[in-house]
Image (cartoon, rainbow, N blue to C red; front, side):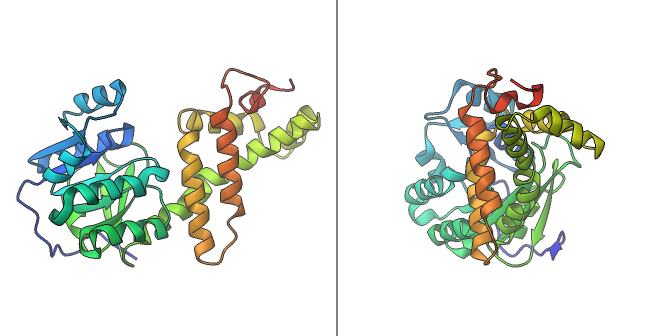
Length: 289
């Protein structure tokens, strides 16, 4: 069950300092959405790329030297990073913040167990489990930020009137991550079966026959592969970790996790392959090689 009218019981400063880790494509949109309610939206510049710096500049975010400085200054820290880095980022923030204990929002595609461990670093009263479903939010109506945990209503209030639709889930820390894992299984794991089918057909020399049979059934294999190519071209490496975390989420409740693990392997093959080499997985959409 979810609520969009949950009561706020914890007070932040009137215009809190909000730290974004990190202003990637999604993180920059999160930071931009919070500017109207924040005293400052800050990001840690150390070790980030020129592209990230430019993205933060365009979003009008304020750079600070490093993560430690961000942790010392921020009232709220929102983590939007690759899933396999989520725990490490949280540990760095917790160590740098010390007794300050900022409100920490983990908005990464991690398992409920991972976010529960992050909650132990900050305390249940300072941790919010978040899940972003949809594209970077530059206009309303396309992206939902699901939130769970004791202070979820506080975070939801920050996004009121922003391009993000913030919704509070019952169930405590882990509920939002569980939702994300379930959603990702259909949005990212299921499509990889077409990659596996196409690669197996090529290995057996039956690509053309397979496409013909699928077409008779109303399925355009090339279109399926091109759709996945478009989505995964820049994100396959990131989705490896997300699929592993989704597998952990399914295993934790006694369900088979093989489809998520297999999807992780397929995305790893994409990440390792040269997109312009038709002899590898990226060439599957174009016919027999």
